[in-house]
Image (cartoon, rainbow, N blue to C red; front, side, top):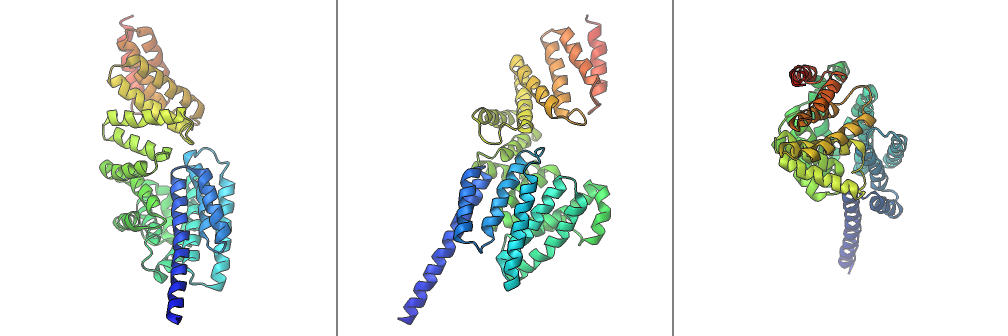
Length: 377
């Protein structure tokens, strides 16, 4: 009888833990699929039912993180995000006062500090971001020591090892800060991120996101980046960030037809008011790549429409200098007008290029074509 009671209690505990884990997984998927309302309900219910578990607080902050990522120029969510992270850190500290070996508290505290550093880096607050990295690393290391089977902690190690090796080379002005930190290891970082992407429980999609971006931005391995983009867009079709990454990867691979398909679908979702698809940076990028494909297909009037939309959006969001999107679109429009035998309009657009910054020899290209076309007037 005693053994039966122990077994029943064990089963009850397992179903309790499983229920929490399943709810967290559901909420995580809702966040990545930009279903913020449902995610808010999921994690608030977890916070109510499991008030001591840090996961509810942490993932409520992650909703704000994705709102920030989808519209980086909008800083209105920053303060709320910082406050929610501080709440996670405080709550974890209260747990750790009673149990300094609580792996959940260590993991989510390290994660909260790490995400605070990520936002500070996005806002060019590099010294504070570096300080957060230095603070988070030993916390995650201790959590890993206590629970070596936890694959999620490899995310933090992977991010640190990769970017500690790469960022100082990409941004030399950060190099002096790195003398106070352990040396990075790029290959080890990639291996750790791949491990989490394959085996992580809570952090697998974040690891896939990092791998997609680092293979695109730094490794220039676009086929490898595409593997992760394909998976993320399939799993989370409502996430505009993943869809933009897939589209630009196709463009970088020279597959403009597939890029057009991705970005045309993006514009359709924007027309249908899917959250995040009607923010200006994504719209500009989508109009641009759709226009390039249409031009290649000799659908010139449709191409002109999308290039002009790209320019109009650029006029709204370009700040200190004209973007490459705007400059290229202006050059392409000049070319289209010439193809349509509208020499005056072609000259007008080439002259506009000369009033913008010189980007990829754009001034030289414009000047050559202006001289050539002026002889045809």
